[in-house]
Image 1 (spheres, rainbow, N blue to C red):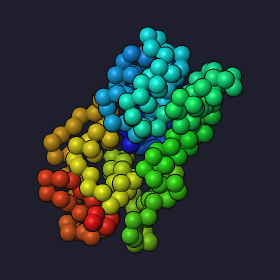
Image 2 (tube, rainbow, N blue to C red):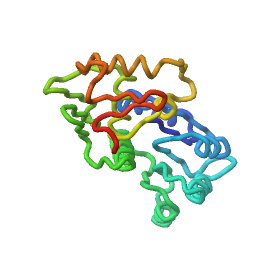
Image 3 (spheres, one colour):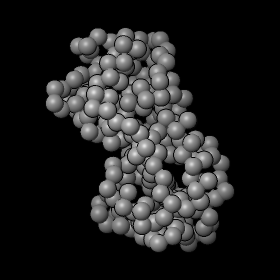
Length: 226
């Protein structure tokens, strides 16, 4: 999953990004002003946006308004020092999906972020089951055929994304866009490498009934689309 943090308190933004990377294995981009943040939000396929309201150049509410006017449904969690009831109501009525007030408990923030992303993909429960595969997105536990499997951060990130979209053909472009932040190096065969690694660790052969390859299209986790 890929997240955008639009927050002008750079230390706070980096701390949240660090925890999201370590605890959720998500790719994270940071913007410290509203103008740049709006551009990034409007031009990249994020799974979640964490948005401050009091930003330089363009306010967080204006960014939120522009996103919704352009029919962009990406989940938005407002993270701000404004704790008045009117501010909270305004943020929610303008299209935010959640609202947290600073200071905050980082564990609660992470839990809310995970819940928002799950629901955006139609996955209400933290455990996603696909055939004999079970992924606990809260604990980062992967079970296949009754045995626990240890994955690298990127392997888990890829598997979680495919599981969120189980039964769909997911293109290589989508995978790269949702698994890498701006600072990551991307290689032409990186997706194939991680798919191969996942199959080996999950005990699957190249013709696995769990991970299907569609030449020049992408990959499907689980049952094939009709």
